[in-house]
Structure formats: structure tokens, C-alpha cells
Length: 265
Image (tube, rainbow, N blue to C red):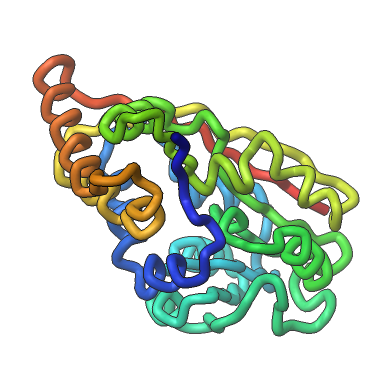
């Protein structure tokens, strides 16, 4: 039996991102967990763009606005866009509701663009790449981030073991647009696509509620894919127990973060 996420199911995504509560639950796990080496992945991603004072930058799929604030720190005029009205509201000023497949901007309207951990949710990724290419002016770049298909293998093994029955956890960021294959899609629109891997990190998880909340926040994606009689709540509890046991045994449950970016011109 196989399982997985209904990555581009509009109904699922509407529920998942009606507001930023689920996103905040996932952000919290990384915010409170010690990592080796230390890395702010959003800051690392924004740094890759190289934008500075006076540049106008689009953050497509801006979520609750963390990268927008980093761009503002650099003196950029940052414009956010998200398909979810709830997310756009959480991100604050200069944020529009819109679809990356049909961007509501003129050609070459931006000096650069970001698409951070979001293209795996887009039904027509080639159309999105073409639109992002259209709105980035000459000399500008797009930075698109995603995960390696081997990101957090330890957590994948934990979840699949909790479900059992040969079910596989087909996470969107490792099946729909991953670090190993996502560049091919971007190359349909950009002449140059450079893959840049972030430093591999060990994430030391010690908070049982943080991991449980992280897993619970993804229920919309995976509940319906489980074998008959299984519930995602069982996976959540298995995660909580795994952290508890790992802390007692060795001090933390350690997850390996393997993320990266494509710099496109």
C-alpha cells in the first residue's frame, strides 16, 4: 500500500492555509530547537538574492511574511503575494491575494523574486516559472527554495513506522518539487538555474508538544491517505512519544535538515 499527500488538491490547501496557524506550528519547531550548525534558513535564502536598498522584490507565496520583513531590513521595497487571503492578512502591508500561475503584475516589474518552500503546492509549476521569469527584470534573479527528497529522513521513518502497512509518507516538498529535480522545471523558463545547497543541519528536538503540533498541523494533507482504520492522531502521539524516549535516552530526537535553493536568471 502506498500513501502520500494530495499536494495540489485545492480543497485541502484552502483548509491548510486558511490562516497561518498551521504554518506557525511548523515554524515553532525550528524556532525552539537547537541546530548544528546554526542557520536562519529564511535569512540564508534572502541573502542569496543579493537584493539591497531601492530594489523592488516580489515574495510569491509569502506565507505570514517573515522573508518580507528581512527584505525590508535590507532597504528593499518588498511586495508579498499569497493565494490565501488569511496568509496575506497575516503577512501585513504590501501583500496581495493572487496566483503565482497568473501574476497580476506588469512585465519586468521587479528587480528580483522569491518563491520559498511553495512551488511544490503549485499545480502548473512550469506556468509559475514562466510568470516569475516574466515579472523579473533584466539582470534580476529568482530564488526558489525546497527540500531534498532526503530531508528529515528520521522523521519520515518515524511516521511511516507509526502508520505501518507499507504506507509511505509522500511529503510535497520531497515528491512534487524537490531539490533533486526542481531545477528541471525552472529551466523551462530561466536560461541559468544554479542549485545551491544549504549547510546540512542536525536539529535537536526536545519539546514533545512542538513535534506533536508540527505533525498535527499537516493532518489535512495526510489523514485521507492513511490505511483503513488508521488516524493521523496516532502518528501525532507516536511523534510525541518518540521525542520523550529520545530525550530520556540521549538528550534529543535528532533530525537531519537537508534544504537548498535554485538561483535562476
